[in-house]
Length: 337
Image 1 (cartoon, one colour):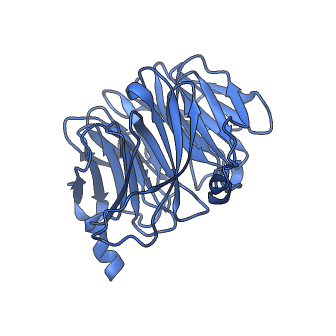
Image 2: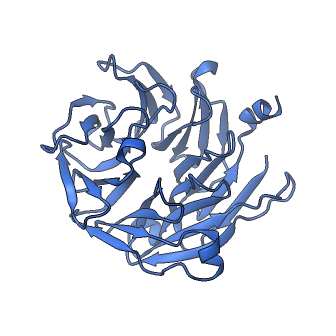
């Protein structure tokens, strides 16, 4: 399996995102001291397009931006190729610009964020930049038990959403239903929200996991399907038409599922980043067991993302300061076919 890697010495990976515009670019959000203290760094990385299966080449570091607190998530702007947002441990969101190869090569990437949005009272652990219907809005999820919707043209939030009783770990806009987003919390609940409801109350709240719910993602193919992952090691699938119980369940082991990513290339495929130091590939058409377990990390795996430009190409990052980009072996046969 060809793997391109990058090591972020003294910085521990939390989130990795491929560019929606450029096939070779990805962003990596990291923190010092495992996110418990110190600052954070945002890396713009570039794949080596000429790497071969035996090279083991490194991802190129185009630029590195620093923030005074840990960075826990990152999201590319869906309408500008050089802009991205990060979520920080100081309760703020940062909007960065100049995140492109030309600016980085000419050392023209600004070292300070274009905008800093500060309202949350505790760590911001997740953010999502709206696409299609919500392209101008940012969604943030915080350990202050609230979510906020931001208009990027303003310095203050549009709406604050209240409905969880504990730390919120993740929130995602639906890619197929306008103004709908989901969130998960350590209260174990999955909440569904209407971004146009300025009262900020959930449309629905269900107990998705008996323990902490840490991640959620939406199918890119079926507008009714989303998945959640919890500290119980379970991945559960949900159907908006029958939310009384989950429609499928996968068991990844005794350790937590930290992040989930539904494939944009196959309706049945998803990836999970796990606290047992593994990244797992699942195919719902092939049963309830993981089709592949990648153990390239030596610490918690916290970030995972699919490259929208390259079929089945995956990236992951973890607390061991490693970021990897590769195509899982279980999916390589589909490329050959």
